[in-house]
Amino acid sequence: MFSYADTVPRDFPELASIVRKVPGVRSIGNVAASVHRYHAVAAERLEGRSEADLPEIQAWRRTFAKMGLKPTQYRCAAESLLRRVRKEGSLPSIHPLVDLCNALSLAFAIPIAVFDLDKVDGVLQVRPATGAENYETFAGEVEHPAIGEIIFADRAGNAHARRWTNRQSGLSAIRPETDRALIVAEAMHETAERDIERLGAALDEALTAAGLHRFTAEV
Image (cartoon, rainbow, N blue to C red; front, side):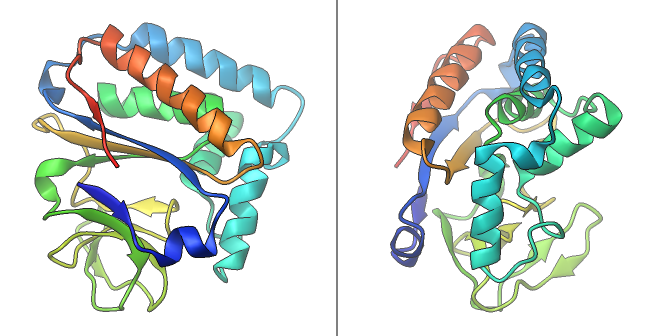
């Protein structure tokens, strides 16, 4: 269901991640309490400082620089969310599962990707791009990732995320009709292994509270 190409942990040994497969997404209940709770945690962490000061974000900036990307031009998803909340005060509601994962991403400053599994062909793998993959934007345009760019790719050559944790594809975005989802959270900072486990526990608790009891960990 999900894997890393051998080169990814080799080149980024600091990487820590958790994965959850979540069926029955259409039956998700109210997540407002969890979303409010984790937005409050994020607000407390941001009080008096910028998201760029957080060690979790600094680690992803170093990772992007290592990949040859300008960190202030291409931000990891968690930094983008934190930056938007700091500037605008809130995030728009998209879908209960996405809202929940965005709130957790804000609180932990760790990127969390949520994919519609029925739009993924075979195993979703984080790997360097060959340059032949197709990436569909939310506007429906098709891009081709640069050779060597780290992407989330499936068997059919669809790139479901570009520049690793920078930007997901519209192809596998969560929608009201989504029934099965794959959640991937990834961290790079010094205490990443410990914090990613804490995030996983918080995610499991929130999913259970929302009535999604059959989720499983994937490796």
